[in-house]
Length: 424
Image 1 (cartoon, rainbow, N blue to C red):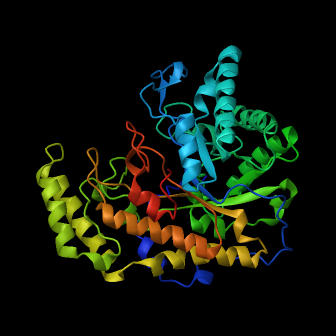
Image 2 (cartoon, rainbow, N blue to C red):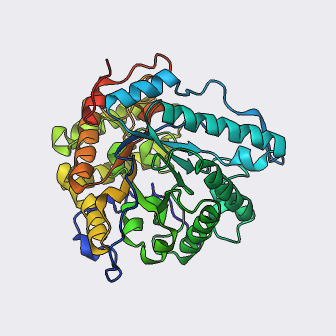
């Protein structure tokens, strides 16, 4: 397995956008058009993390979870929240589900968890929303993580994961046809053209199809579901698993969307803030001044590490401002996904931009200026719609969200940027 992190993009994110799409990844010879099956209820959506995430696993060497396995203080959408989301004009949610608690549980506890998931699906459908259930392994978990479950078909817990995918497909088929789909993996870690990922995906789809011949399944390319992963995906072998939808994720340029994100590994992100969108809305000098101010208040990082981080930050920000990214930058990236669809005869409405978003500045994070964030979200959403792609915004809650965790108030700027309406 070739390791991949979708966030390891500082060296290439801006430069690759300037390369013609056809030169980035070879496309297979065009296959016969795949006919869409049925009417999809997936056009405008939002990710409903952390409804089935933020778990309470016991530390090693234990591999199980407390009960209930999800943190009680995490924000969870209520039926009223779901109804208001529908009234904004959204028509589906993508529901990330951490498989760890299901796989670690005994039969009785697993049944309870499955019933909880059934209830969440039913509540979503009752609100008039479709739902894509995404099995989303947590990379921060010490045992039930992507490496142990989906790094290859020989991974130590792959068979358990595969069985869960099959079980979920069998349960989801009972719900309203055309309103429910299953996405077996989130952001596969293998390289873009990895045969390892192809084998993992085929095995999971086979398990799902054995349980449900008709449930829509969502497939993706490697390298973290980036556009380049989709461009390297050969859809011909996947036709055997119809009905299928395709997905990719979009956060480019990460210097903007993930500025100030504490979970990013690269040292530049810790103090990065005030990066404008588009780049012409600010200047290198203004952004570097904001970075220096953040670094001055950082008492946890050594002066040597801050000096090295600042030098790297200055370098990558110069690339950012020299490239002057704006809507054209996004159109270039999404144009690669549309070119792939056209080359394979795949209708663009079958290709969902399953995640996109940007971290906001609030009481927890110092990140993108909120007006710039709104402009970025609007540009990405409009570019996807111009290409014919459905989308799912990341996220409902937390620092990338559109709804306040406590008050449940919708962010008017995000509602407007997403082309939605404030519910009455």
